[in-house]
Image 1 (cartoon, rainbow, N blue to C red):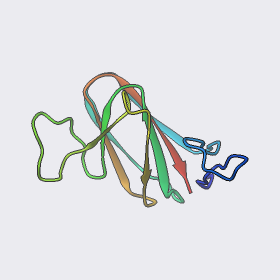
Image 2: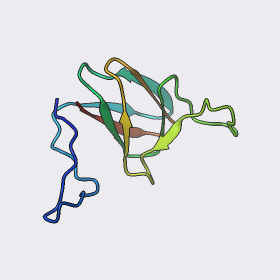
Image 3: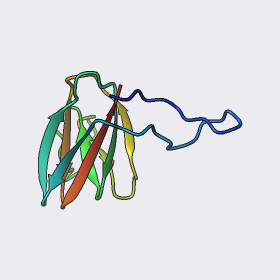
Length: 111
């Protein structure tokens, strides 16, 4: 598994969205609405999630919100209008994804 590192330009400044080439990627395919989950692999400490359409991500059980949620139990949206999200994860932790329409979701894991 590749270590997550910050790319720098010729002036030593961070380059936004310049990630190392990855060797550990999982994918989920949603034909329509549904919920799926996966476990972060051994050695994973970060995950970059990208999706072809908006999906909801949660460490517990994700759900597409049907109404306002104000108790902290909601899931974060990523994909679609949000190009990607980077999360800190622990090896063996659960990632739950909910979709309301067809989507392909990729999970790039970094050490």
